[in-house]
Image (cartoon, rainbow, N blue to C red; front, side, top):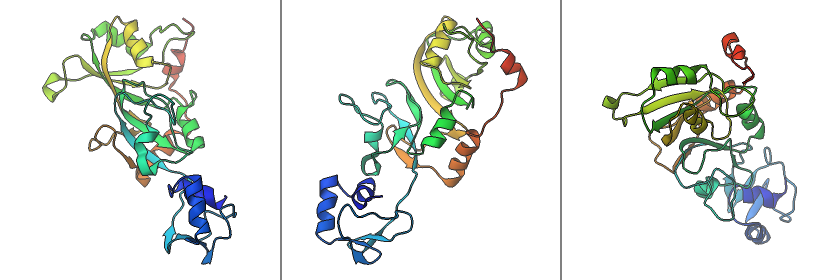
Length: 255
């Protein structure tokens, strides 16, 4: 890796700013002042210091964010604020959201630069669980729940995979008509389309779990934190290839 790129990824400044730091002799590589901003380094084994302070490079980063409303799930956007912009000093050029939540949807979002893990978690073949808390326009009937848990027609070639529905009790400080909905796939606007298929409407939607990872209740909207090693291992296990139960595979029939 080039030294200037290394420094940029550690948020030491823009490309022109870090080049200036190097030319001022403020950056050393293995105890020797860096020769130039273009100097090639081994980011994992070389010792890089800025003004004597050792810089630690992390090849992959993993952040849990409580996505707020009004922010788009993208790395960059010319017109709107993005989830990556909320990372502030922790933002890197290679970070992206693993999957998308609509602009009006809140809750758990994984931000990383680990493309391989993100691909496994988002692959349709993996059927990684995603749990949403939805406030609906009106209560679900027993027949509505049965249909959602069997598979509904959202206008595609196949029915949706069977979901898991839990009706929340208003006594638990949840609004009336609130449910938990766990999906095993990630189609475009899927939760909203599934509820429309049973003549209902989503009023409010928040993702609370993804691939075994649960949203930290201490994170305020827009806040984030690095994943713990235990949480990262949960995600990696979720991204390991698995097969659907036989009864679920049978439900994937043509509409």
